[in-house]
Length: 593
Image 1 (cartoon, rainbow, N blue to C red):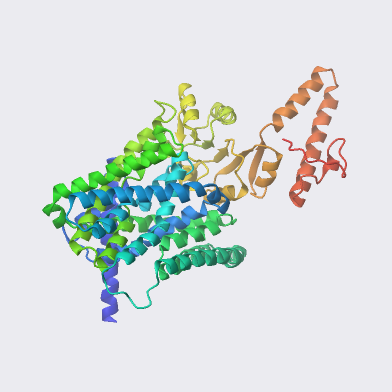
Image 2 (image 1 turned 45 degrees about the vertical axis):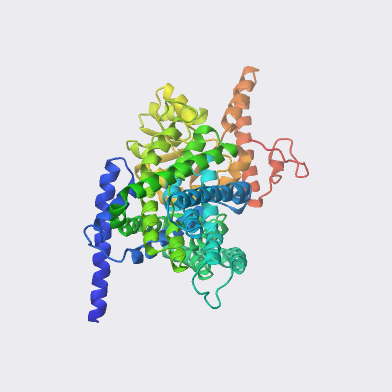
């Protein structure tokens, strides 16, 4: 009992120390505009064994905190349906391998040329440096709503392939190994077959186990069960991949993709995201704690030079590939800066190489420091990338985050021709508004007319929360987004229950897709204007006003009846008898407003 008491005390003390250090450092670095990641790294260095020595065993903390990366990949998978991955297949299977191979071989050549390593050691040190930090890049792309931009999608494709590439890279290490072969250890080919079979098993489990399980949990309506189910899916899929020697994060990603089309996707995302944020912070704390300052002190110029060389080489290679794959100069340099650092899987591969007797522990520490230092440059490079992104297509538009907006009564998402009219009427009524749009050119045009529009994907829960949706009276979705469906709006309604929701539908078909989201006011884009034109035309040709009014009223009644029939049956031809001149047998497949 006494031993258990001391263990619990140690856990609580370590947790309080880590979270307290993170809290102070992140507050300071956020205030300085340098971002949270650098704050976590610096906090880890300060409390780590080489400075204050307040917390030991950073490797244990790192192993635990890697769950944050696993959760991150699961959440990213939730946003990518299989059909969208199929569209991205060229970038994943061609762009990704080229990036890893070219960057890794370039670093191999530099290490082999300037350092006294064998070619085998230089290879197993250089190839891992071709990987970038998923834990740094993806949260930035997500939080800023840039995952669906041209450079965002290609960056994600590269990062996804990098997670897959852990298998061939470990196979290379195993093939070059000088350590005695482990009895029963699988070959690289067998490992690849295991990985394919495991992915197939996860796909089947997602369709025939997880989806029915979520429907059952949905009927029970216990939020805690959603959290338990989501964490179960993540842990089980990650454990399966880890058990066969493949990236655990890849397993979690596959599980996320399998649930991307689930109606409970947004609830899973909202429930798991807080765990991801905390664990990723602990991950970077542990990386900072593992930094060997003695190694840096012994060879500062070499480590700084290698880190700078790594950033420059990867920037040059990724920029060239971006141009080759159709990105313009601006998008290519943004992507190159985002992917220029070393990645967390480098630590895994260096450990494997050390166990294979290909490198000494000192070399693993040296290049671990190079990766950590390159990670420390990323916040500064991301600031530069953000400024370049803000200048894309326009030289002077400021793409500010909605967290900079003052608290407003109304949030309007989309400031095109529809949103502009809505916004002006709201202001005419004396209400304060926050305007959000994802198109830089539209923000630029609005700025010319004195309208401050904030940048971001206004359908994202985290962005709406930063915009003050918790305290707003209403959220009006005025953008021209024909892919917007009921699932996303249900998640917004449940997250911000005090805000009334209004949405613009492109046409009748989209309105039917949105109708399952209850307590939602839907306005068809051209419906009211076409009704108004018909009424004006009737009046202008001297039709009796009462007859015109009756015709409009009857049309609205029939249109509503037909909408209900279409929604109930899921058939666009249903209820055609309610339209003037329509018959049940008519081929009534018009895509009406």
